[in-house]
Image 1 (cartoon, rainbow, N blue to C red):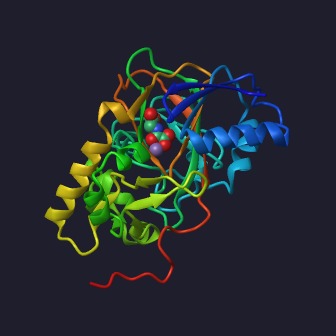
Image 2: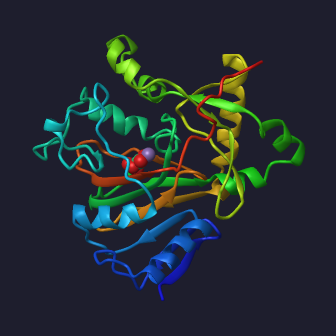
Length: 299
Ligand code: OGA
Ligand code: MN
């Protein structure tokens, strides 16, 4: 039996009496999965994991998302860690701090906007799992917002007006917001990451709970002009990230934190960029797109 200790009601739980470096027996894994489906953020303390151990645990939740993005982020030869991971660090392949203009810095800065992982892919992320190797003494927390609770707090009439909307998500939007020069994006790089549609309201397959599906990757809502879209998305984001829906994680070395991208948003908090911070993120894909492959917006 694992120990499940709620940290924030029905949203975040700390899991104890477990060793993630070993292969979990099926019944123990089922308890973890049940906690994952009920809460949306799980915290495991003091879990020093090798890359292989982290991947072995992550893939029990689904198919691994591989972090090889031609034209988009960091070439394989310049990676600090395996392409099985997103490198959530400010370090280069030699363990040195990246420069102010390094593409890797823009990725970190973009992560400081509220988002959900890989919503800019047709099949977005299901679950992400960070393992912390180097932490900063101050700042650098990760915040999580419960998008189910945020949805449930909306009046019924408001929910009804939102439930059938579809948003366009674009990888480059959040990068350009932090200073990536749009003219520096080659046509090949642009074409490798086309903007994609995602429903604005999702329903969790295990819990049945509905949630808002928002991210800084959203460019607009289909059928609305940019100004109207922005107003709506900004207002919903402000609503969903009120303190009562948010948990702040202060990192310690060897923390493992996993979250359900289908019903949460998260963001990194700023920190002194001259301090090293290093985490590895394993991400597993959802089972399919949130809107049918052949979907087209029809006014
Ligand atoms: C991520 C992410 C924020 C942070 O790992 O997906 O957005 O705190 N991280 O580094
Ligand atoms: Mn993220």
